Image 1 (cartoon, chains in turn red, green):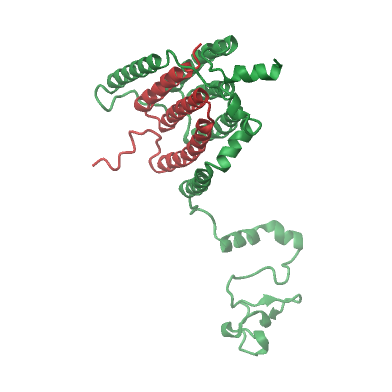
Image 2 (cartoon, helix red, strand yellow):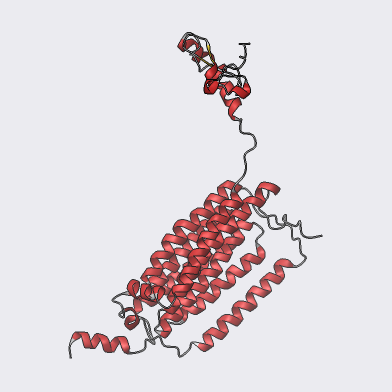
Amino acid sequence: MNPANYLVLAAVIFTIGAVGVLVRRNAIVVFMCIELMLNAANLTLVTFSRLRGSLDGQVIAFFVMVVAAAEVVVGLAIIVTIFRTRRSASVDDANLLKY
Amino acid sequence: MTAASVAAVAAAAPITHTRPGESAVFYLLGAVAIVAALGVVFAKNAVHAALALVGVLFTFAVFYAMQDAPFLAAVQIIVYAGAILMLFLFVLMLVGVDSSDSLVETLRGHRIATGVFGLSFVVIMVGAIGHAITHASAVGLTSANAVAGGNVQSLARLIFTTYFWPFEVISALLIVAAVGAMVLAHRERTDRPSQPELMRERYRREDLVSALGHSAPGVFALGDSAARPALLPGGAEDLDSVYPELGGSAHGSSAPQESTP
């Protein structure tokens, strides 16, 4: 097996995550699909780190994980706040800025 | 030629083919990861989507471990599967697990357009990457990991030297995120009883009076005004407990006294 095959798998997972973001309406599931995309990017970083024989990719993947954790915390807090006022976690219902 | 020098030569040579064990695990867990990722997207129940996401995260942890990144594999399981997934499930339970998606399309042709986009994107990406990596070879991380005596030590050396400022900035980001989540998720409770209401409720209960037999001196307040003097053990009012401005005789003055109602 070519050691770069991980890149193909990461591309497939990234696409699945992107399709999920576009298709799903439940804001929490949309967030899970964003996590899929972030993980695919992380796998790409780790694979390139191995291909090039340098650890910088792993350090950046570590930073991406930290940013993902912060993003999930704030995003879920926003979802909870929207759910309190509108009693819904669907992204279609949050349309106050529409008109 | 010693065993160490043989290992050094083997490590220096570029890796064009992975070991058979890694290939087998890659194809097996790659299929598992794709199926679990499709499960995240297409599961009707949001809790099932979260459980499928756990599967994806664990397979990715195995991929990291296979690619000489044991630290990231551990962090993946601890941070993602441990903390972030718990947060997801917690919010799901808070919001309600029955908040499933509506099947009505708000944009016409939305699903078809998404399908076309996804298919074309995956074809372009896989085609381009597959064409580019046909003769790819990996340098391998054996020498990079040996710089400081191991993967974790080498990563730590990088984080605390080259990437020191990004590390500091990202720690500030974490603190800001934690404070922001508290500010966003906090709600002021308005239905809480005030302190005087709590006190009246406490003294209205019969069992307190019956347990003492009679009202304890200085405890059984008849009002919560600051002008009301405390009761002495004999039942008399202690006017020294009230400020003279309010009719008491505190600080030694003998001001006019308020009578018991």
